[in-house]
Length: 464
Image (cartoon, rainbow, N blue to C red):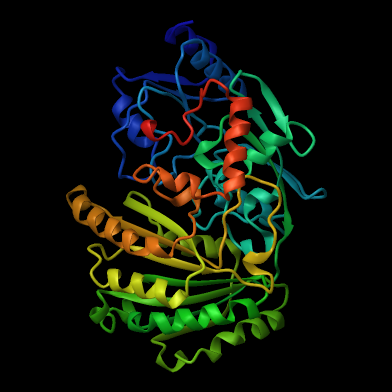
């Protein structure tokens, strides 16, 4: 079967590297405007689950590697692989909710905002990603560090089953009883997953009725002290609190005061996912005891909010139609050391839009709690995420140098990485370091069982 026959057999669209619209379509496959110079041979935009089966079988018959695009939010453009057949799942956006069973069946291109909007009608919630336009597919495959993840856990642990198309072109359901090894892998394998996930069955939660946020803007020069204090009290906060230290562009009202810090400000933010205002007030009052509190430039305390509003607020930190470089590290090093390093580099960041986030593990158990059986297996006391964000191609070089130098300076603090947002394109070893050693070995073994011919591109350094 040739390309023309494949096009006749599927509902979607096949585009070859020689077609007139290929260049624009290839760029559209990546949300990040910094599109890597990698060129699929075919792009198959599927319109149904059956289209996926036919595309996989075509690739196997013709000896082509398969790459999969769930929504295009991979910072490194993992779906773009040279000489591959790229299966674009962007058209699969159906949602079905059973409010009584608290289960949702979603297709891969459903975004966190789409799912949250529908769940809100039933008073339900799911730990969707902080960036509202992130589709669930890559988010879940990577582990899914979404809202309230200290309490609800990484989103992949709320995955109860999935429908996938395997390397031999069969459509199967995986869960704890059926194909348990493949179900183990789908929960955290990230771009190394060796099948196409076409539907997810998600465990839902009762939506907290009194989500409340307190925010404290500090001079960037004091971020070490604030971070050290936040790290010391994180375990005193219940797991229902999301505690983060940001380095962000100063809001307009603080622009003049933050000129000395290159326009950036430190933002300590805590969100309580609780059911009553009294719980929120009692929980968040701990932030008032920070010894640096008298130096706050601005406070926004005990602000009731909705998950939709939190998504909108986060979305402003990661604007669309921009160019990005991103990397992450799990760390048990003193937060003051990590954040002090971040501060030193943001003082000369070339772009005023760049952002860093230090997320603290809250709750008595914290990161010492045992994780469920899944590929996702790397965690620590803090997760540091650093993003260079800019708009114009002429600024690529200076931002690339700054981001590389910043991450190099932070690397000594890393005990591992979050596979969904680490640069395995530039640093292939980061893939293995995103898993516990035994989980990495098991992942390779499960792949050899389900994809013995390495049909899926996976983590392979020479194809990314």
